[in-house]
Length: 184
Image 1 (cartoon, rainbow, N blue to C red):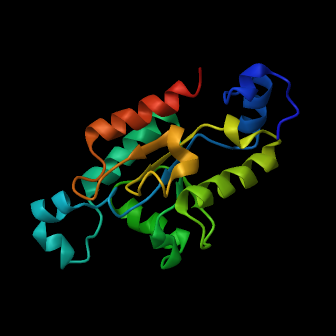
Image 2 (cartoon, rainbow, N blue to C red):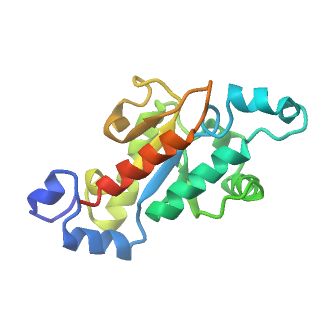
């Protein structure tokens, strides 16, 4: 928790002193990123049926939308997808890079039996302790197709996609707006 007494930090925004601490510690903004239902979708496999059989499980259009979110907000990526259970962050970085992602991938949420929203919260709290600020004051969003119940701790910063369409341009725009609004 921050030692700051600013009501701005208490309201979930960063005061100038806390913003400087977060920046010097290299924290945020972050995109907590799921893959299935975000970077691939029913629509992708309908548009490119060969993708399911050629080992191309990620929609390059959706990957570039994530890149746009990062470019326009300065965000870095934390993998929250279940793919982190099967592939290392280095392999996920390479896989996304092959699809055009150049944004920094800084790690992955904890691999435990907790719900995804709680895993994200745990990662943020650990990162915040490093900088001596409140996790509530950090800039981040979660992009995921999980249910609201699964993502409960992230609700104010949750951009919900669907397996049907994945990450669309409109949802990417929403993610950008939500991240930028946290800087006020």
